[in-house]
Length: 417
Image 1 (cartoon, rainbow, N blue to C red):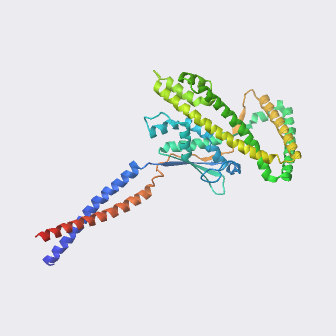
Image 2: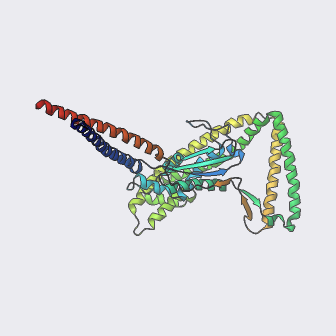
Image 3: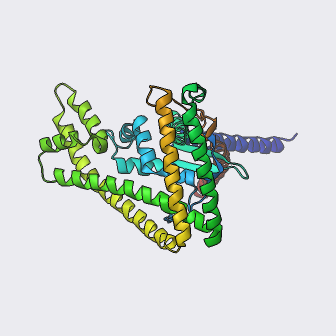
């Protein structure tokens, strides 16, 4: 090997080593930066999933009511779960208002207002139904993996509990002292079944299954409207009593309205139990609750208006029924009320306990959510691939750029010489 060949080979090796050194440094720095951003700066979102089996009726999509701005109607089970009456007690049971407030702004407030908490909870939830089954998956997302699992499991348990059906206990069924009452119930049950069959025939005659659905919805909407109106009246009365009053009078008024202001009274009791009481936090709680009362009243009024519209629309359809059918419906209601009264007498006669009943839910929890260990967002596999490819490209570009700069410097030195 000649001296010129060895010298040329040495220069190639030197260039390669320079490329390798620059590339390795840039690759290491960019990779470290990418992993640091992925693991420490980007929010880590964990998703926990619970699965439950619901009755087929819960998967039905209502044919009346409001549509959401983003899409079609939601199934019955999702409407029930997303309702404020369902979510708000769950939020308070898990103490999420305090946890979320501490994450958003630790020094601003102790708890997130109810309206904000409900909005946040709805954004965290997603539901999916397995194709051709009645299996529902509840997915809850959170920065805290345990919180995500707790939310998904709490929703599954609460929904199963609320859908529970009271059944007579075996001991009650076997009681010989109530045989005469049981025989009377059996006869009345037969009367009710015959009357239901008659009503169904008239339904088919005067409107078919669609009319039956209208009647069922009308009765359900009427009950919901009465309950919503009573709640609105109570909130309006309470707001009128607490407008332009001192904080002490405000506290005294809400103390007598525990059915509506139980959350306020509970929080107030916690603050007042401290020694000495934190007057600043108590004043802040009162100010926030005054605002929340107005918002809740507006929400309650909007709910009443929506239900009133639904009732009016369904009433117009119901009024088209024939007198014969309406009479059969009234008779069925009378017979059903008699049957309910007999069943109540049976419960009272078979035990001294107020509710000696077993509870069975048509909703079955198939699997509870486990605490996730790997965040769903950002996707670690995808992030690893992007970081490796990006770092490699940056390393090659940096090494090439460094070599070009070195060549320019040497060319400049040769020109000067």
